[in-house]
Structure formats: C-alpha cells, structure tokens
View 1 (tube, rainbow, N blue to C red):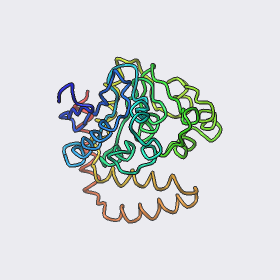
View 2: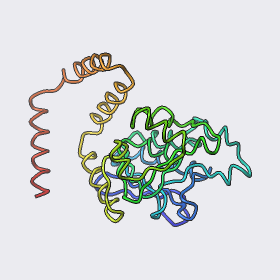
View 3: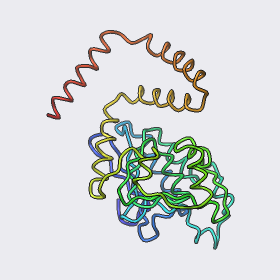
Length: 263
C-alpha cells in the first residue's frame, strides 16, 4: 500500500496482519474517510483465511489515535450521530470487531477518548512506555457511544474508571500496566516486535477453537460468577465430547515440534 492510504495493511507469512492507522500528522485522528477505510481493511482480513491474528497500531510515535477528528466534525459532521452510530463503516470499534480475528493493540502513543475506545476494542493491549490513555468525553461534552463507559470499569474497576472519566486526566503506561489495562509495557523500538510475537503465538492455535474459546470468555464475563461457571460447564461439555485421544496427541506433537523449531 502507498503512503496515501489512511489505513495500512501488511500481512505476514506467520498469519498475522498488521493494521496501521496512518494519519501521523493529525495524531491518527479518526476522520470519516479513515473509519471507512478501517472497515474495508478489516473485511479484507475477515475474508483471508490465512490471517489468524491482527496487530492494530498507529503510525508515528506520538499517537495510537486521538479519537474522532473534532475539527472535521465541527465544520461538517454530526458529532452526536458519529459518536453513537453502530454502522462499522462509521463506528471503528465495530469495524475492529468485524474482522472476526483476535486483535492485539500495540499502543505506540496517546489513546484519547474515541481512541481509548478503539484500544478497548482490542483483545489484548501492549504499550510503549510512551503510551498514555485519557477519556475526555466529559471535557468535550460528548457521551461515549462505542462502549467505553461499560468496558473501562470492567477492566480497571469502578472507582478508577470514574476517576479517569470524570477528570479527563491522562494515565501513563506504567499506571495502565498496574491497573490491568495493558498486559506489557516495552520500549518504543520493541513495541511492534513484542506485539507481533504475541500475535504469532495466538495464530498458532486452531482458529475455530480460538473463536469458540474467545466467545466463552467474553460471554461469561458479562454474567455473574456462578452463572458463568454453569455456562462454562455447558459449553465445554458439548465441545469436549468430540475430542479424541488422537486429537490430543496430534496437537501435543505440533506443540513439541514448534518448541523444537524455536530452540
């Protein structure tokens, strides 16, 4: 792809697709054109059976994404509609989810408001030590419509979520790690390699099994604990009934072979 693309796509032989939001001079702000292009790229990934996992990042070292392009919206857009539309061509969170593959967010800089929501759409977050997160919805007077008000509290806890959302304050990568928002913090130059290695480990797992496992985790997370345990039992009883000793041995051999190849 060329530099004119607002979203770059690079598919690796390992089965990992790297998707880069590409408006570095505008802090990768989510213009209407970028959001539409993000959806098209995610559909390309969805249709490509060779792609097993995705890394999502931002161009440059200043921003993952600063969120909706408020300059664009202030001159020609309907802010309220843009912030709540469920159409994945407009809603980048739904665009990310529409790829149907596990997504590792490589947070290279600031993730602000709508950009924070896009980060929360990823399954796992890895951050550069330059990364910072902020929810400025209250400061600009726009209610979140892409899931942040519900996801953030479930990730960092109610009090911490309210602290972020009520004040608009930034937290740095070290705090994000301490709060459980990100799983790793690395030097900027190591960010993409770290995210790729994680995505490649994910890509090794059978895609159909991974999709089912991901759904089990996500659906159970929205339930009470006892209901979630019953749900797990129901799902696993059905899924595991067809697993044979031969299946287990075949997978064990594949894991061992992969380990030997990495030595």
